[in-house]
Image (tube, rainbow, N blue to C red; front, side):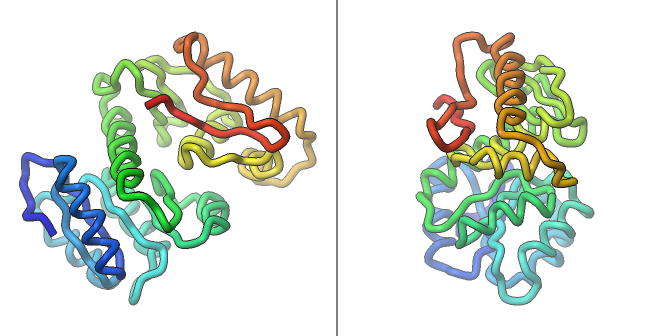
Length: 236
């Protein structure tokens, strides 16, 4: 792993497969990050507690020897809420369950993955978390989720979303490029499992798009997938 450099963003990789960890670390180093690797879940909390400068982000595998990723995510959120977390899982179907648990992770990535995708997602999460702490840091092309304040900022401007619209945007932004069916979106929007029609989802998406378009009239980040549903696709 790369040697920590206080002038570079630091990432903690918690992954019990050394080859995957080394590959991600090499790509991170090439992108201006430093990293540290831990293989065992039991080592994570003691290591974080001993650091004078903690990492900005943890890349956290779900299945680990010792303490599992779910427990670690909850513990880190309670003790060090400023650290961003990206969860890694080997199963696509796990993402729905993880989102439903509302662990507080900033993003979820399914294996197998491209190291370039991981680096891109890390950069996006760090942009969002930094801008949420200080909206002045939001770039001209950033759409930022302030999850504690239940608001979304486009170019630093509050979009004025309702709770349902915020939840809808949050689910899609946590998995950029992933296609969600209307039924999946309904499950995330209405946790009480009330009966609503697919037209209700379409109506909320329409309102959400309109609010985003008021700030970004030339962009469409929420895309329709004919016959399936919707996805969040940020422009590169």
